[in-house]
Image (cartoon, rainbow, N blue to C red):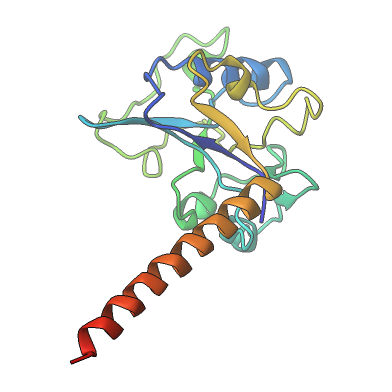
Length: 197
């Protein structure tokens, strides 16, 4: 089991502070300023979507240039090696990887407009001439701030985000197993009582 960022949707207010902190932290480290987590809004709930640092890591297995590697802390993308093929984003079961790139319209000294896509186009299908894209995903801020922890967790005003580690997950799993065993025992007792004449 891996360490990852979890969320309590009941506490999330959808303010976007986590995204801003993530973006700023990575920008200062010289990486893509794109936030490594996304916010999902529904009428019932608001929640952050972030990488689960999967044990099997399909993104790691599918990368054709080995730009995605597993460190002691997280699965990270080497932005200089990534070729922007988007295969990792396609296979991610949580939708936690997406392409990012700086448009040529955002580069100083260029005066011609670049093509844009309609808002409804998925980021996986969108492209612009001359824009180098690379995959971005949560790295738990381990590549540049291993001691401080994830910026999004520290910035969340309602403490909706927190780091789940192996010890916490093991304890939760044991509690769930005990609860399931107790529920199973109750069902067994009921079925035994129903069979008696």
